[in-house]
Length: 389
Ligand code: KIV
Ligand code: ZN
Image (cartoon, rainbow, N blue to C red; front, side, top):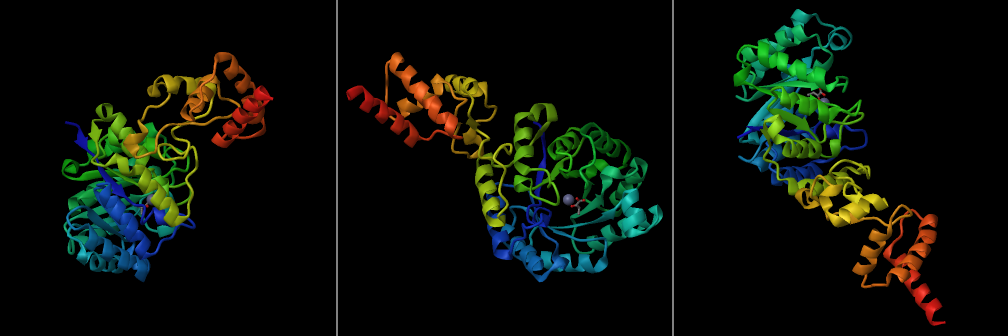
């Protein structure tokens, strides 16, 4: 049996930090319902001290989730944040406080203006302070991707000793390369005493387009939780996309020694829901859930897919809840695709007739991005008129 990887969804917290994507409590509840249907393990419901609305979202999602998921409230390493999160999480059966602070030279020097020793002290304090309220405390080492490795190991050792149950290693700025990030996780897994009793989590951002690769490198090297968002929503270039991580783990589970419990047939529905609620459109060529993820436009690919789907598709669209493979007719399409579509519309022709229709089809296709069924009907009718006149 492969290792179970927890899927920690942060669409409602980090995803919502995406400019223009803010959601009200009712909208968050609708998405949380879908996350529960998908069987994610952990839902980060909000940042309770940030606004009364976020406080209420954490309360309501805690109530809704019951035993089905861990519900998380984010805090800074600040007592009043932790008090507020603990208050909001009172409704949750499985509450978790997610607290932490920056650990990179940039964050220590320029943002927090504290020394390394002060950082370690604050890390220990916030974990112990949160532990008064809940057993399950996750510590985040913000900007761990740019931190000195020895210092990162020192901080993580301190919070493990203080009772953290999960240690989150974020590449906050999406700066790392996958191999380096993997080594970073392995360094923690090898060198922090007692880490085997604690879950290592990875939380990666997409500034260099590598968030998914980073998360998977983390999993390969010992992480047992991945933090991600639907459609990769999130600050700047976004977070790791949940649908990508889940499907990559599903397809490469043996080599990663990993599996998740996510119901993959819900992925497309979840993507559409988040897109319609936030108004953030999903790019057509987005992996797994984009409108073109299972669409084929060139003649060579169409010919292959019509003979056997797996010639150009590694995922069965049904496995992610998508409508199905799509053959798009365009000027790049060949005879096979045209014949296939005409047959679906109920037309069969001799080879000679097809050749004539195909020539006319190409003329139309050169004028348009896509040739629709109405265009095909016109081509066929036009041809029938010319034959009978
Ligand atoms: O990217 C990040 O470091 C975060 C933390 C607050 C977990 O979102
Ligand atoms: Zn983040």
